[in-house]
Amino acid sequence: MHRDPDADALGSSLGWARYLSGKGHSVTIISPTDYAANLRWLPGVQEVLVYEKAGEQAVCKKKIDEATLICCLDFSALSRLKDLGKVVQEAKAVKMMIDHHLEPENFARWMIWDTHAAATAQLIYSTIKIIEQGDITDIIDIPLAECLYAGIMTDTGSFRHPNVTPEVHLAVADLMRTGMDTSRVHRMIYDNAPLSRLQFLGYVLSQKLVVLPEFRTAYMVLTEEELIRFNSSTGETEGIVNYGLQVENVVMSALFIERKGEVKISFRSVGTFSVRDLASAHFSGGGHKNASGGRSDIPVTNTIKKFLEILPSYKEELLKVE
Ligand code: 5GP
Ligand code: MN
Image (tube, rainbow, N blue to C red):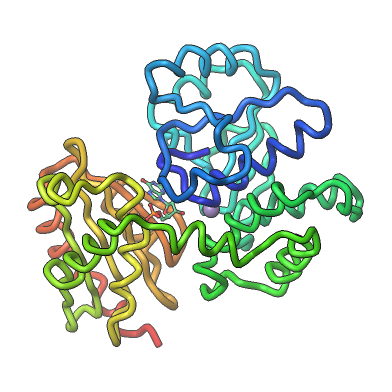
């Protein structure tokens, strides 16, 4: 899975691993970095090895070295693996990619790649269904369904983004038939935050949200000092970028986070405006048309300056969104 894994990266990986284990394979699940606290309940998550953790790196390397197959889930560029990218690139195992992001790199021999899939978890569901020739009754159990549901639910913004298709609802219907408690998954992910996260959000929305009506753009900047002051861990900034889109007429929202000497940027948009194009053209990033990310290694103030300078060249596209 990709670095800073979200519920789709983690859920699809855990679901796929559970399926393969059930078929008798020996599976190791590796994340390049640690993940958010609200995902620590996902079934099987305690087995995930974190490459970045000093104590786990050697095991990860050994497992990758011994592997016959490396499944790359929810990313299509090895740079999304951080330092692990080189290890995977050099590994002799056959590589397989299962993903729904645009413009994949050509590193995998096998690709299950569909940009119309709402989530990688949806691709795992349909892949299992194809392998099982339609009969998944005894194959997808409650824990597996919970993992896949978590991925689909979060990547569709709780079934509200335009990536929701009839296929998404049909997949979810099948997952629900296992008897899983969908409401619990929502609560565990969205209503499970420490009080500090809500207070932090209150601070960001009241003090840091800037709206530029002439560009129909909203943005927020969080400095390292603020993250430390609010004791904010990686997961606590997740989702904050979406609030910018709640402002009337805004079609693009950006969140700049200064962390460990680099600036991580999240972009969200509505309608025809592609934040993926903007992220890949100016911020070494990518993703989807309406949800993308990137990074910048110049200081945060210069990064914002650069962002404000490129906005006029997107003005026409921003204004024409219906
Ligand atoms: P988020 O803002 O939640 O970190 O990311 C939104 C989307 O953009 C996700 O689909 C994610 O995979 C993609 N994304 C985030 N950061 C990067 C990046 O640095 N490079 C690329 N290629 N995609 C990114
Ligand atoms: Mn995804």
